[in-house]
Amino acid sequence: MWRLTVLIIFFSTLFSDLIGQKNSPVNWTFSINKISESDYEITATAKMNPSWVIYSQFTDDAGPIPTFFLVDGKESKFEEKSKVIKEFDEMFDVDVMKFKDTAVFTQKIKKSDKSSVTGSVEFMTCDGTRCLPPAEVTFDLKF
Image (tube, rainbow, N blue to C red):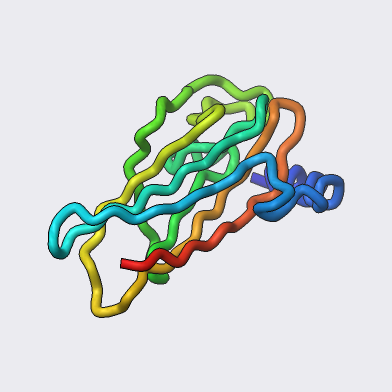
């Protein structure tokens, strides 16, 4: 675990200019679709620049920081719709579960009394030789 902390601190100073949605090698989009009168589905899509990856919500705890979602302030597990690649990662010395190119996540929700649903995704991205510190992207979707 200490290796991961050292890696994050080291790379956060080296690559701080890449942090944030507009300069990140990962671009997120969010949408909400009505399924029935009270049921909706949130779709979160990550598009990665070539050679960059993000990690599954279910990757090994000894490895990179997994993707993490909050919906209306509560932790939420999204269904992972894209093909997950499981392979040994030498940087972390464990098997990791990751996505290349595009990752699509969905979550079914019930419509609330509010006019929108808010949330965020926290993710870590690496390109095989370096990693960026975790970044957070927020969303606010209207019903």
